[in-house]
Image 1 (cartoon, one colour):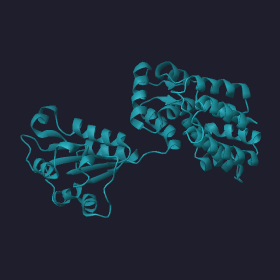
Image 2 (cartoon, one colour; image 1 turned 180 degrees about the horizontal axis):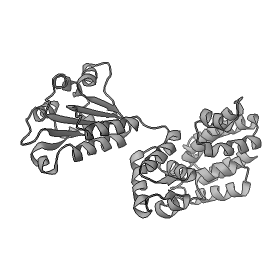
Image 3 (cartoon, one colour; image 1 turned 45 degrees about the horizontal axis):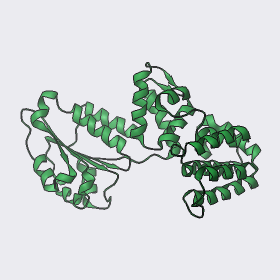
Image 4 (cartoon, rainbow, N blue to C red; image 1 turned 120 degrees about the vertical axis):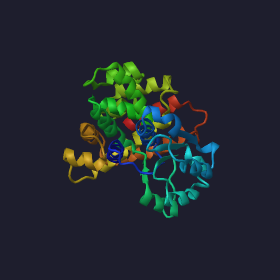
Length: 334
């Protein structure tokens, strides 16, 4: 995120490079940088003759080079944006010859999503010298809630930890999907607002009471009635609450709980750091550790492995997923 801010600042200050090669597994920042260049490098009246968008599936490397070598018309620069450039992965190395001596009046933007180029080859080494290479790496699930908080803070909003966790649980690590939902909330909520679980439930449709986050908490607290209510809701709404996701999240929770039991320093700060969780959730692990000794946690982890296989249809084809989930809950709380 800091790299993106610096890159955008350089562009705003007119410190342009002849090539921006944007690559990596996470498309969100690739799109953001590319869109910023498209909307800000040229004045509106200059774009008609000096800005073009090409698509990898429709062109060759020679087409890119041919367009990049043109001179701008009545402007200092021209901008050539290549979207879906990963469709040119078999021939992308041919761009190395142009990268060695790029047209200084052209800003060439390559959007190479979901992949990276070979860092041992000539193109990568040349681009490091003559242009900018930005690699957009996919965030781990435990990093996404903090990303949500930072993005909102930069826009004068805040979010409760539980609300951020609900978004992560429901939308996963897809930053574009998460950002789309945040944009909807910002339209509704005035600047400076704090986003709450109630806002998420009312405007995005994620239940604040019946979700994997609440199930995990209920199991950790051994709140049997609450856990069974949530599992019944999941069984009645299997499409919105696939068992494979629930089992995966519970497996991660109990694996972290096993790690917690092994910590010598159980201070809140060290627990948050060691388990890579928001400090807000440390008390959940403290409570769960009291309710589940290390030996029982190991047994639960083994049970979850078994049910993970069953949730994917191995050895339990005729058993409804809702019934499997109820059976899993009984075994965990036994």
